[in-house]
Length: 125
Image 1 (cartoon, rainbow, N blue to C red):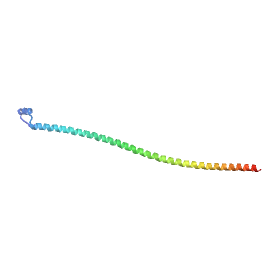
Image 2: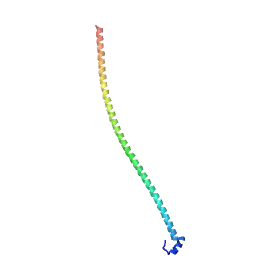
Image 3: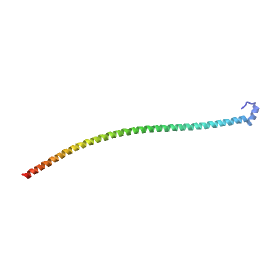
């Protein structure tokens, strides 16, 4: 506002001049714009925080997934090793059984032959 003598100052306060009115409108628009900007800024800060939290959560889940995948690979490797060892053990036992079966069969054949031999010697005599 312009500086005026005190007597006329009172009169101008009751009748605001167009410049003062325009300044007040501009001041109010500026305050509204500042409030609006602060609202946008606060909303953007909240979104940025939420995005940061989501990215952190995603990174944590990704790390956990990689850890589980590694554990899965380790377990698969151990399973394959154990399966191979079990197959080898089975084959060893199978060969032993086969050897035992052959020995048993040979014993049975000898027994049968000896029984035949005994029987034929008793029949001849």
